[in-house]
Length: 194
Image (cartoon, rainbow, N blue to C red; front, side):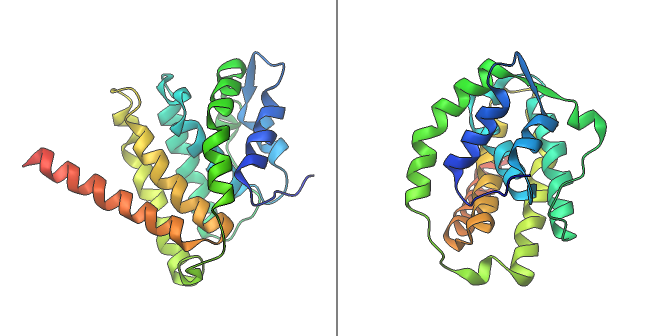
């Protein structure tokens, strides 16, 4: 199996290889392409899909929520290689739409890759790593309900993506940005309620 690099552009390339020439691409095929140590890369792929226009496809936010919750719990337990139930492994996405979404994401991902470096390392390990993973387990709980309004799960996907990416590349600044997104979302929700 391949070993994953710590680079978003490489992750996009791997997912694109899984989707090329296929009418539909299964989650199992994406996992196989990601290789060893695939929990964080798989989480990033799910978040990237949620940030893209693919998130408007009915069912994608709910499947994404199940994947994120399952994978973050496994990451908290120290697993490197994910285990997923067959019904999730067999789920599929339209290959052509996925490839279009990956193309749409190439420039933003290249920008992020260029501006990543190890910093604020205390946020990426020990108890702070568990705090980050716990936040990423709680956030997707609302995505199935948000599916009623297309593209609203995108904010949650971006938030989880920032935190997981920060853990993936050991850059605490991205984790702080994710926490900032949580604060903004909660603030906006409170203003809407009151």
